[in-house]
Image 1: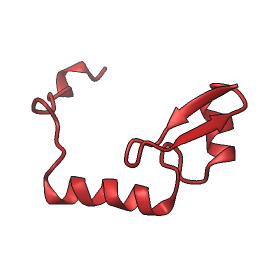
Image 2: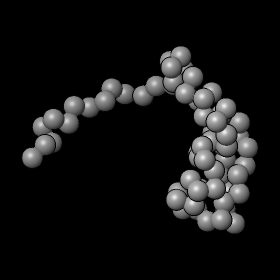
Image 3: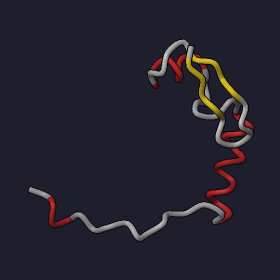
Length: 64
């Protein structure tokens, strides 16, 4: 049996297997263990504590 760890509180969540589909079925807020941890993470993004390490590249020239 594999395990996943909540990125907010570090709680270990047992998984039947390592597939994302199984994880989403077992845990409604995956990869978080609960709604509270999901909202804490979202708050960090809104507060500017999290961000992208580099600017998003313009891929307009990649279109066909």
